[in-house]
Length: 222
Image (cartoon, rainbow, N blue to C red; front, side, top):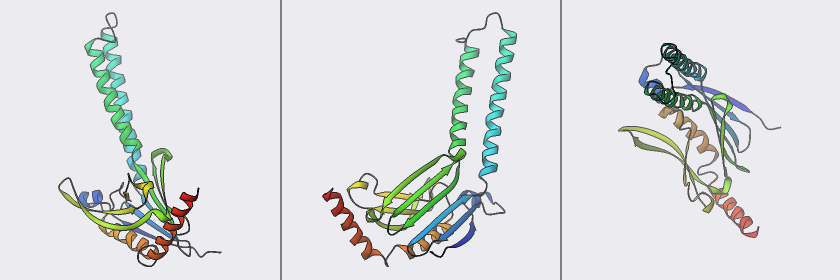
């Protein structure tokens, strides 16, 4: 049975750092499953409160819109019509604002995961509000390397953990950001990078080239 060891660390996101939060808002869970297998999770500890805040705003918008239309229909019940300016313009405005707020609510990130096994692949998974998931899997032979890169975004310097791919399968997507949705701090990304570095970079580079050639041969044979 493979030995499993899990460590938990807490870090600030860039937003929390700038806002001056008293407690760290991100929790980094690293589970070493033995051999060349590791599972890394980055959990948003404030997701529940953020989701409740967004839902309250959405409900408040619905309440105000309902109160407005009830008032308009009560005062002008005889001459009311859907295409009148006092109805159609507020209706379109409320609908657009509600859609934007709903999109913001659904896009809240709860957990980001990475599962890496040299014998299989590297799989990323992002869990958003209400359990919505997006999964991406990169086969072992299509991983070129993993780098911690410095970029400039909105006149601000930030760091990104990047997976560089190779092969024709990922020609349209040669660069894949890792743990980017929650904007973790440099210290958090550096910790993740060191863990993945120990499992992949340098020590397994020759094995990677060998596996890539094997995968390429199997694709041609099929």
